[in-house]
Image (cartoon, rainbow, N blue to C red; front, side, top):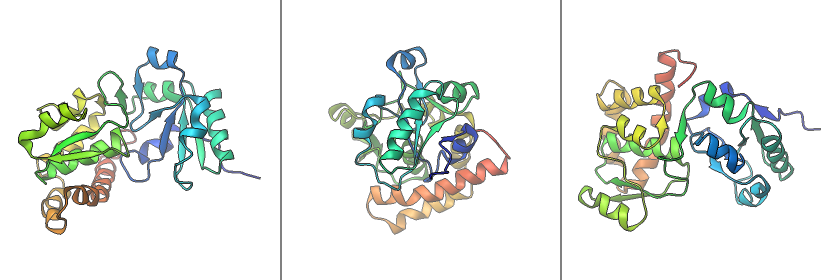
Amino acid sequence: MDHRPHSIHATELLPLLGTGKAPCLIDVSIPEDVASDPWRLPTARHVPHLNVQHQCALQAPDSPIVTICQKGLKLSHGAAAVLRGMGFDARALEGGNSAWRTAGYPCLALDTAPPPGTPWVLPATRTPKVLVTAWVIRRWYDQDAIVLWVSPVHLHDVAARFDAHALPEAPPGQSFAATGLMSPDLMGFIASIETTTSPVTSLLGVLPNLHERDEDLARAALPFLDAAWLQYRQSDRQEVV
């Protein structure tokens, strides 16, 4: 008999965000609920509840999955049960989107955040600022995001030609807010790296010496930024981000 819990509380899920331990988030809210509350959890993908079996068929079997609906009731629990029947470690988010939003936890606005699957364009400058940007994209917007690395002068032209997203020209915190990400403490973390007050900043500055390809460099930076993010949260003894 399976004695693993069939649900996960928001306070358990929250510390996993922004790290490589974050589960795959599947939002099965009906279109009416999405329209009335047009937000999603960071990295969540909207999937019709009757399609979860098909959509997750290619998911790695050892990848944990959290299903989400508006109130954390029948849709998310039913979808999680379907996925457990396929062999996945799947749990429903207690309270759903409603409880998450009420708690003031990080969210993405659907009207301004690029949907999952959208390519992103970043300048191939190999700076700590760009590496942090790549980390935010893959840890807070889309776990499987495709990043197109180009010369800065071609950034917006490439974005237009390839239906990709380029961040607005603004300080990182402001550009992410304009792209739908709501998390003041995450913006504080980004600012600490930009102003070199984070110990990871100097490490990011020398990491390019070990990697010739931009994509390899960005992926190598992920665990260092994961650790820096956890340290940042713990240093302030924050329970929420």
